[in-house]
Image 1 (cartoon, rainbow, N blue to C red):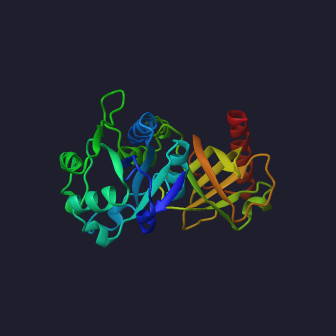
Image 2 (image 1 turned 90 degrees about the vertical axis):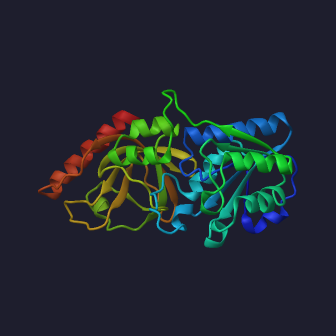
Image 3 (image 1 turned 135 degrees about the horizontal axis):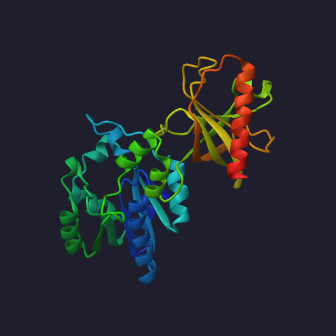
Length: 307
């Protein structure tokens, strides 16, 4: 998959482009319906498939709006789209100037002039253009004017309940990770780079990788989790602690993982972790030895679960 930012849209020269458009801030099952339909139609009609989305999230730019916490980072979005066999990812920088662009201008200048669309695929609640004045009906009319097809996809799950990123965020924050996984179509995952910590775990004989998260993630409740860890395309089991380390009275939230059967140096490496199961809440221990014993139990539980 090739990533093209708006600075290079004008250099795109493919014809017969089938394009899914949306914020796609969770790439959940509803979003995948839209993208899979785009890829499928492109193959049937010997075209190229593309996804058009935005960075940063539009609500970070539009004043007076609450900024939602992230379900996926920019890099995760790119990685997931690649696995969905998308040919091109078109990323529009969402700026105050772009937010002023009227729906008709967006269609004419971006979709038609730069991206040569033959077909646009969107969700039934799609809105676009300045003040969200554009909707699917506007898009259909513009398609008739500029000779491209418009396909509208419903994003309902099996219970006729609309899948939404907002709903998934709430499930994650409440710790309902299995329900969130069902809507995402994959385990909830967070990523980041390994940084130097205070090395308390190493001194206690239970070394941990301390992770600087790569975006402002929606986070589940503080506690210990069994996780699957991905490092350089290899998978490991891990016992992760998410929280404030009450035994040591930390002020900032930390995410650290004891990676089972792993002893390599990975500072500054990007790693990702799937949340598999909640093990226990955070506890303030009376002594370091009590903490060590509990950590060993957490690791044993994780080993039995994942290994």
